[in-house]
Image: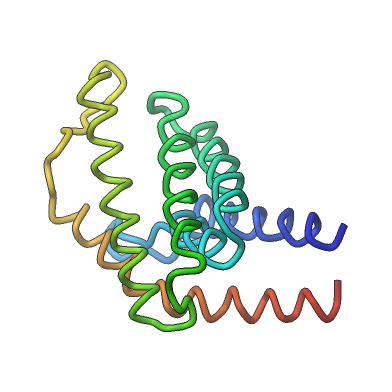
Length: 166
C-alpha cells in the first residue's frame, strides 16, 4: 500500500511540474521535460515494469492534455521507461554522469520516435516537422539533461522522506 501511495503522489507531482508550473519556470518557452526525467528516474531506480507503467500513465495524461495524435507520448514514454529500466542493474544510478547520459539518450529516443510517428501520420503533426532539429528543441533537450541530476537528487530526497513518513 505504501508503494501505491508513493506512486500516486509521484504521479501528481510530475503532472503539476509539467503541466502547471512549466509555464512559470520557462525561459522564452524552453523548460525541461519533467515527465521524461521522472520516467527515467523510476526506470533506473525501480526497474523495467515500474518504468513502463509510470511512462504509460504519464504519457497518457500528457496525451489527454494535448491536441496531437492521441497515444504518441504514451508509446514514447513507455519505451523510455523500458529503456531506463534495462539500465537498472547495469549502471550506478547515483552518479550524475550516468543520469545525464541516460536522460540524453532517452531524449534522443523521444525525439526520434516522435518524429518517426509524425512522419508516418503527418495529419496530426500540427506544424511539427519530423526529423528537424530546431534551436528551441535543442535547448529543451539541453535543459532536460542539465536539470536531471538536480531532479534525481530531489526525487531521492522525496523517496527517503516517503519511506520514513508514509
